[in-house]
Amino acid sequence: MPTLADYEPIIGGSAIDELREVAARLMDRHIVMVNSTRSGGGVAEILARMMPLLKELGLRARWEVIEGTEAFYRVTKKFHNALHGRPEAITEEMFRLFAATGEQNAARLDLQGDLIVIHDPQPIPLVETRAAHPSAKWIWRCHIDVSNPQPDVWNFLKPFILKFDAAVYSAAPFVQRMAMRQLLIAPSIDPLSEKNRELSPEEIAVVLGKLGVPQDEPIVTQVSRFDYLKDPLGVITAFRRVRRSVKCRLVLAGGPATDDPESDEVLHRAQEEAHGDPEIHLLMLPPNSDVEINALQRASAVVVQKSIREGFGLTVAEALWKGRPVAASAVGGIPLQVKHRYSGLLVHSIEGTVQAVKQLLNNPDYARRLGENGREHVRQNFLLTRHLQDYLLLFLLAGSSEDVVSLASRP
Ligand code: UDP
Image (cartoon, rainbow, N blue to C red; front, side, top):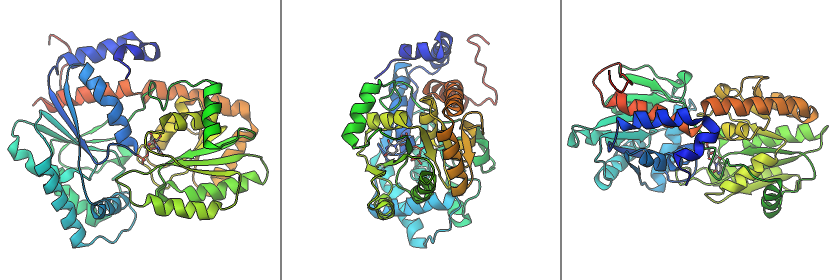
């Protein structure tokens, strides 16, 4: 695992000094992060990288994961879709299962700490136990866009959320206004992880060889869980239209997440759609296929993220950090990362995706410039170290009764 000093060549020494200064005010503070899976998806990705650095900075940080039955994860997947605005039939029985699983986890997990950070809706009912830990502060860290949810699910969750001391969102457009402290913290990627570190062309070639993806033609890639909201079928349709005029291969790389029961079905649909097409590579990657994803992103002439709805969209930041030209839907957190015609191209439809991918494939110099701008944008805004700094400030703020927390060492 990298240490803080390893980030200095990327972000500079003063940013590291600032982290240490703020952390000095939080020494030995006990932080508990809780989410719903240890691998698969962006939240697990961030937590895995952040925990060691919090510890290095002197905080006592622990990561707990809730457990649930398959039926529970089917319910939370429906909640997830409904919070993104998709109509879902949710029954009273489902609400009961959600709350009951929360109670079971509350009995099982060690929630002793000074700051309890609950990620996303799945573990929300744990807040019911806060009376048992009266001095702890509770933070709801929402990674998804809840600005336009289905009312039944939102109305069910809202009373839980109001019991937290603060709610944190990834971006301003995701917010639900509520009578509580609300803050914005953008997610991040770790430039030193296996998924994002530099790779040599030889390393890339070895990985692609193992995955059975030839580098004879430009590669267009989407890395995503197999989820309808990531629109893998739309990507296949767009690819086929691009290929009518430009030679290229498509890679759709995804993997399972323990909290996503729909992925098998979506993969199956994508397999049917791609059936018998040697230029479409559907890769179901096992968990922790970080170097594989890294190599695929780096080998790509264009990275696509044609999501229908999206949280922040870490895969976009990962591609931009690698200097890749990106064509991505203007949904969720993607427009924060892709400034149209500056750090990538934003698309709104299948036809728009076709045009954008063709433009990038046909104009390599332009594509390279967009990629370079994207990398710098990520360096300035979406690296793990900036995220860590925001969390430290959040912990200071949450632990204080003041609205404004002075960061000067001697006020
Ligand atoms: N990811 C992965 N394996 C896969 C698919 C995705 O490791 O097969 C990673 C991807 O590289 C990114 C994260 O999972 O780091 C997905 O985060 P994102 O915000 O793009 O989407 P989410 O899955 O959270 O909706």
